[in-house]
Image (tube, rainbow over all chains, first blue to last red; front, side, top):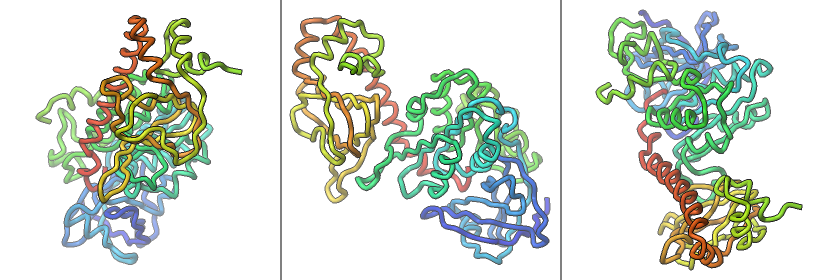
Length: 269
Length: 156
């Protein structure tokens, strides 16, 4: 429960309000994590927040987080210059099933900052490209200047991933796709069979995406989503992140869609 | 060499039509190449044509005073560009601009409207397909209006 000090190694601005920070233990010891896990990240005097790890799981010596500055704690974290110490607890939570999906096609659907928790899974899959069939990334954002990791998208495509990007609105200078991310499902000609899907983004986006994937023939047992709830302790004690009979910090944040769907249908949850 | 009939048979919107119906539709179409940046149609003009995109991409835009052209959606290979040709008063409500050199099949809407008036079976099949397309776009537009990324948390 006690945060461990981590030193800020680097800080990069991704969009107007979103930053990626790389951290390391002052001792240099690695912090192993699985794609999809999160830490409870804190800035002294500002508070603690759950933040998904966005770094490379094959580089546990560098702990990366992509954070949107939307409140006191996240603003303090995003403002942390290299050399400053932040606190971290974890890693916590159920990861993306990167081994279960071996042998199949994998569709990754990301909305907005939802690409951050999926980035470790993408890096994992691409580092082991031969173990998977078709790899497809469907990425939707609000506007061109709010897309994450734009310098990496081409690299991922070169490494064997089909990358389709769309934004909800754009001016005439944008020559890419405009439209909602769910429409990319049919454009990518996603089909059922051996296809798995991993989705992360706003809850509405994930619901609509799951529906589009199901219409395309992807089985609900083969779809996985990462949920966002009010996580506070990170270890299943406080109960703030309860979702149906589960606790998101302990049983999630990654859930199998067929296990989760019934709970999302209850409006009070 | 593929005929217009062969080409339109591959498009989702015309999928499953009878050969005779495809022939009737193809009779109103012709191959076209457009340069990037050129307009397929503009707001307010008579909607006397519509397009099936074979290659390339097309932006559906609206001109907003002080903000320039705003792209509502982009269309790509296999999509049709143009809905207003189906409904009176047959005037375009938005602009359509090619984003890159594009290959299209352009249809003479007056020709096709005449054929569906004479062949209600064909008219029903076309309306069924274009209505499904409209419903799909309406759903996407509703999703767009939610602005889901504008209310995103600190980390997903």
